[in-house]
Length: 319
Image 1 (cartoon, rainbow, N blue to C red):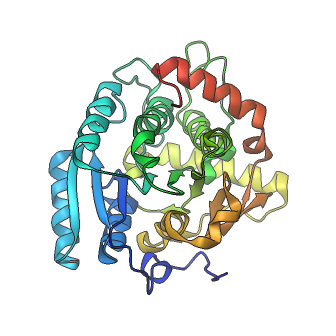
Image 2: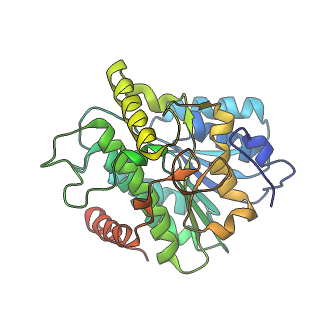
């Protein structure tokens, strides 16, 4: 097993690999971790279907990638995960232009945004981060099943520690809205989804959730000084409970932040951790720190109930 760590970069993880002929779908490809993943994977010969809400920003990202990787094989697609009709249109388009999908990287997301609703009436963070990717994955299952051992990599976050999913009030209809609680619920949902997809697929499909670490990207565009201080206070309190340090944040570069999702997408070493929550290019265990997680994301009963709720909310089931 090749050893990587929190400082490892996308290019180090991909060193020496030839990905020619493989097809990757990357959501949130217009900046940050999605763009860096697309760059690194395309540099090794893969075709990247770049899917993002803002077509202009996505085109600009593709230009940057092609400047670094002149032979990059990219296709650009509009996808708004906060609108299930957009998810359906993208999946239909993908089925028309792609003959397969080897890996789906569910990278896009929103964080700590003001209270709002998606086009379909779901709380914005739960609806975008979880339900949008849930629906996308189910719609792309036919393309994924055209290959042996396809992979689905879904970004979670250490922010899952803030809160587990609330299956009785997922859209804050009775609970007062809290931007960080909503984010935590959505990131726990991502981890539950990664595990439950591995349990339910039963056909060689590999599924993982990933904590990329703390990285300065456009994900933080909604942060105010008050929200930042609230988050740090939560982290300090959590660290004190767990005996795991000060609760401060160690930031990564974008190149290192994208490495774990790329490692999950291509490494043979990750196969033994199907359904797992990964961080710093490795497996994790319950406990404090970036390589730790809250035990609630291991609760298979919660994951199963979330899956059934999600199917009913988006009107799709695993084919």
